Image (tube, rainbow, N blue to C red; front, side, top):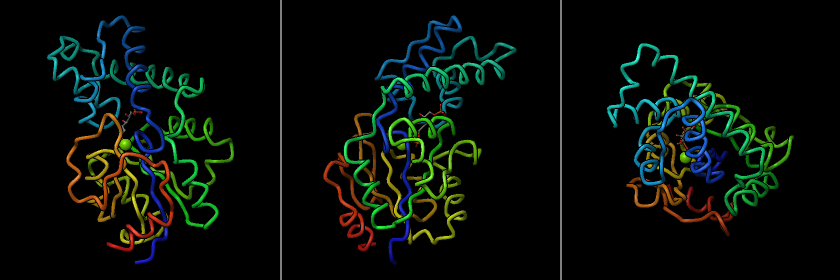
Length: 235
Ligand code: XBP
Ligand code: MG
């Protein structure tokens, strides 16, 4: 089938955001008076769960933290997460999270060749919007036909819901698109929607099981649209 659209994941794909997320979680915990500190090794384990609120709960369950049995836990987690989002946005606005090398070039090739692009992510909408605007300019959101995010679909990756939602919006068959992902959860989500997937790993996701991906690369640097078309043509 002809390649008719690219679908980009955000965290770990457009940019290496996860350390900024991690530090924002730590800032939010400290501000609220908790002594929880997520180092890189712990965060790598916590990334098994997508979605910030779900990740906080996963951490509390994993460490059997007393906060879990507090009567206000159902309001505490969203409050901590809202605070984390503020800290994260400040980091984005401070220019601390650039796009991965090669990503901007690929996006411009797609624009030049009139290949539509969309986004499928589990993160909070404002995070995607700010990342794109800060790094690509105020008009860049309009370069993407559809933005599927954690605000559009409540069920996050590795479930296929966000990919199914994007496909429905852009009115294409799964075989007509190519998903660009960095993680096993992302791969599972796209594959469950029957979408072919190219994996480009990062420090947090390297070594995960990517069985079923079209290919597994380490960088976008030097990656051309022609190469993506070739990979897709082999499906
Ligand atoms: C990314 C995520 C996100 C972010 C946190 O997964 O899991 O949850 O780490 O974002 P993917 P929020 O790249 O597979 O979409 O805190 O806004 O939920
Ligand atoms: Mg990702």
